[in-house]
Each structure stands twice: as structure tokens, then as C-alpha cells.
Length: 298
Length: 297
Image (cartoon, rainbow over all chains, first blue to last red; front, side, top):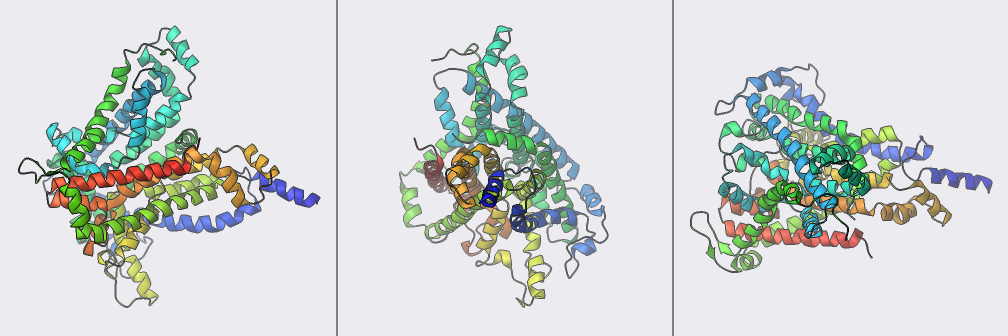
């Protein structure tokens, strides 16, 4: 009897988030580890392939791991120019600008709107938030055609801003920030007002420090959508010098994908595309988890 | 009603930047889509009003839509959205059962495929499903003598859809998965203890009576994200096979059907009608999800 109670207590102690390793966790590892290997292999493959010399990329039988790692693919990539004589580094530079501007602007836009919707009292407040919540489900590819017309008629066609503006509208970002700002006690803001702070001082000194986890989440989402975006470059922009690196990668993988040099260059470009995603996510992941715990749909 | 914390005069300024991009890229496109869907528009002439003809054509005359696109979309949505969602819950729950460091590492591994959206997805998987004998899958299966000839995986109407589902499932453990994981980890330990005292006796009951009710907001968020991801990733068939329409329409989904009519045939009115049908479908799905996980009171 006593023994059984002891066993039951142990079961309780690992409801979720156990502190210590326990024998009962072994069966979880037994299937999680194979799943992780299967899911991680293609990712590992991105890394391995980028360093394969050409003869290994075309080796038959194909080999998974690289024997003689080399940086040739990278130097070939940067020696390459597109059909209109634009060096690869130019696309990379475009992508960096697009990404940096998108990340900061989308944080700023969502933060100020989230602050207004959370802490200000005005008529359309709850209506606006409801509209945004419906838009959480918005699938941008479904209206790619009307979007194209909006871009053309607003004069954004062939404008560098066409790479950025469509990405700044992130209903998820506004949603997460609003939920997060809701948790900041009004008294803190009242205190700041008494000290003579205006809205923009409050945003900078009170809201930003207290919403850092949510801001990191918005940053990560904006980063991924901006860095990986090729749609704007292929639909809204015809001038090659304004296009993004992701677009460039899609052209080498489709046109030169089967040529001998194209494969190595493509592998290197793929790694350059993927790596920043991974690094940014690893740096910010604990904050992302923190945000997600505090703002589901309620 | 409570007083505003600071003056109201800054509200328009605070809301303006977001509202402008929201209007430009979500609200106006949706309205334009609804308007265009009632017209015949080939981008050369001005749109001509034709009432509901596009919708009638879509459901009665478009054999490709009824025969391939709609069934494909349903199958794809059930597997990628439905099964993907269950899988993300299952993986999140499993991760919550182990200690912190292995959990963090495995969560990063499981999440990382979702960063390979769009361009990356096809460059990675094309190598594996390559149609000649240097493709990894072909080589592997030939070595095991399961097949004699290399299979054109991505050009085959039999295999394209399963491959699309597999690839999308692989890359679908994104923000929704993280939200569910965070929701489960956030459940109070006392809740579990109380439940065990009340007679919960195994893991399955624990999930049903404690974990899901407590993580419901995050589960709903996860469901919404799963739904968005399903439709947002619809281009995967075109990306993998390299052509739109996909071989024998095997991987044709509503979104690729829209692009086929809009950007390749320039029948913008008709394409807009398909968009509207898709938007309505997504809206219905989301209210369904809301009913399932939302607050019942």
C-alpha cells in the first residue's frame, strides 16, 4: 500500500516540465529521438551539401557526408553574377536592408498600435481588435492578385519599398503585443504620466522594456518572413537590382539547378539563406516561449 | 468606462502606421477581390460586370476545379492542417515530459524545418526526390531492390500529393507548435496534483482533464496557425514539380488554381472569385476551430 502511494506521488511529480531525469522518460526519448533524427536530417543535409566539392555532389552512389570539405561553392557563388550582371553580394545586401527595415518597422508599428488598443479608451477600440483577430487567419497568397493591383496603383511597382511594406502588416504581431501590454498594470503608466511623460516616452521607457519577450517574437516572425521572401521580387519588381537574395536563390535553383556549377552554388546559397534564420531563432527562442505562454487566443 | 490614461489625441498617430499597411495589404485587397469576382476582367479591357457568373462557372463548368482542385485541397487540408495539428500537439506534449536542456535542443530541431519555407523547401527536397538515379530516395530504394528503375517522384501524379503532404508536415512545426508547448509547460503543477487526488489515474486522462483545458488558449492559437500554414504553404506542389499546373493536376490546390488563372491566363475576375471562395472557406474553418477550443461560456 505504501509502495503504491509512493509510485503515485512520483507520477504526480512529472505531470509536465520535470526537473530531473526519470526512468519513465525513457519511453518518450525512445520515439522523440528517431523523430528528431528524421526531421533534422534534411537540415543537416543543407550544411553538409554546401561544403561538398563538385565531384562529391555528383558522386554515384550519392554519399550523405562530405569527405573533402571545401569552400569552393561559396567562392563560386560570390564570383557569380546574374544574367543582368548584378553580383550576388548586391542581392545579399538588398536582403539585409529589407530584413533590417522590416524587423524594426514591424516591431514599431505593432507596438504603437498594440499600445493604443490596450491602454487607450476610444470608441472603435474593440472593433478594431476584433477585425485584427479575424485577420489572424488571413492567408496573403489568396489575394495575391488584388495585392498586385494595389501595388501597381499606389505607385509601388518597381519600387524597393514593395519588398518591405506588404510584410509590415502582421496581425499576429499586433495580437501578441496587445495581449502582452494588457498585462502591464495601468498604475505603472499612471505613475509615468504623473512624472510628466508623454505617450512616446511611455512607449520607450515603460512598454518596450516590459514587452521584450513579445517584441522578440515579433522580431523573429518578421525576420523569417522578410529574409525568406521572394514573392515581392518576382511579382512587383522587374528591375533586377532591387530584388532579394531569396529570389536569386529561386532563380539558380530553377534555371541552373541541373547544371554542374549550379548545384554547388545552389547548395552554398541555400546554407546562406538558412543559417541566419537558425541563429536568430536560437538567440531569441526562450523569449518566444515566454510570450507564447502568456498570450493564447482568449 | 475608465478614463484614458493619457490624452486621446495621440491615438490616431499611434494607430496610423499599422492601419495604413493593414488597409493597403489586407482590407483593400479583400474588398477588391470581392468586387473583381463579379466581373470579367482580362487586364486589357476595363472590368465588365457579370454578376455571379464566375461563381456559377466555378461550381458547374470548371471540371478541373471540381475534379482535382477541390478534392486535392480537402485531402491536403485534412492531412497538413488536421494531422499536422495533432502531431504538433503530440510532439509538444512529449517534449513537455522531459527535462529542460534536452527539450530545448529537440524543440529547436523540430522547429527548424519551419524556417525553410518557400524557396528553401524546394531546394532541399528536390535533391532527395530527384528523378534520376542520383536522387537519394531512388538510390536507396534501388539498393534495397525495391525498385528497378529510378522513379520520377515529383512528376508522378501518384506520388506528388503524398510527397507534398510529407514535406509540408515536416515544415509545419512552427509558431503554433511553440505556442502549444509553452501552454503545456505553463500549466500549474498543483493542477496535476489536484487532479490526481480527484481520481485521474493515467497519462491519457491527465491530458484530457488537465493539460488540454488549461492550455486551451494556446491550443486555439495553434489551430489558427495550423490553418493559415496549410493554405499559405499551398505553393509547395508547384515549387516541387516546377510547373503550374502541376503534372496531371495531381498537386493542384485552390491557391495554385488562383495563380494559374490570375497570373498565367490573366482571367482576373475568375481568379478573384476563387479567392473569395477560399477566404470564405478559411473563415468557416476558423469559426469551427473557435467553437472547438474557444471559451464555451
